[in-house]
Length: 314
Image 1 (cartoon, one colour):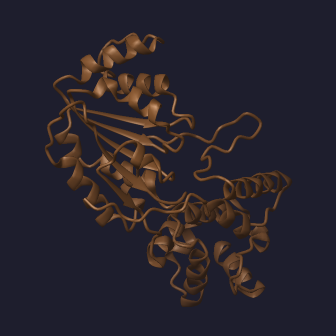
Image 2: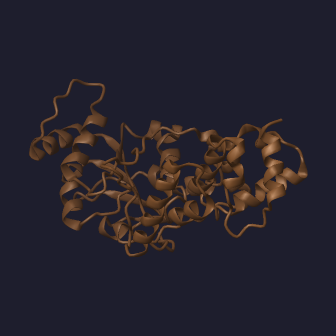
Image 3: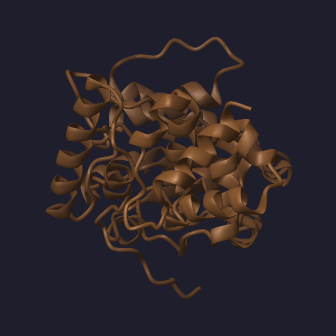
């Protein structure tokens, strides 16, 4: 199957968040400086890091759980991935079937993987499923341990820290089973690491969905296809924004207010993560601080911001 075009590694989310928000507190000022620094660093990386570290803290990892009612514009992408996963293909010569989801940061790669992972047809088609959030350095032992824990969670299993023991146990568990494994946010993957990780999959029917911003990862893993995600339409991005913005904005029927909200959402450039962040920022900010929220390059004047403030305080 023909591989679709892939996105450049440089992320826009840090830039969007940085230019979209002026902070109302010293704490947020510090956070914005961190985001600005992160955006500049991303310019010099082919893939970049999803996990911005501050005082030794890591951004919360992803899980397989998802509120499907708040996902928009990914029906065709989901159908594309499902078609590939549900095809019956017997393993031969240890070959693992890999399907990649590519695109820039914040475009919704993890969300699409979650949609697929939780689809009822997938749950019925696979005997075993495992969700693994990559910890930035593609630690083979850690990933193997997580997969083994996921596929044995209903059984008593003492996990050894020795990689050989872990891989032998994993191969035994996967034998004769049809398994789906999601590797979320796998950016820094070397071929030797991948070759070692896939050893327990040999002879079993294992399909892997990998999400990545690194264009080389699908090639390293010999993915049968890469689904490059495009940005959302303005309407879908607006829906994401409203799901996370103050509830009053979602149900207001004033055409003027709706136009202002749509203008705000359009500044997210179709990136659902940016829409979620900005909507949530409005929800968490007190209405008296709204005048400090600035939308870059958008013709929203002070009186319009005051109109939104009045809406929130009705």
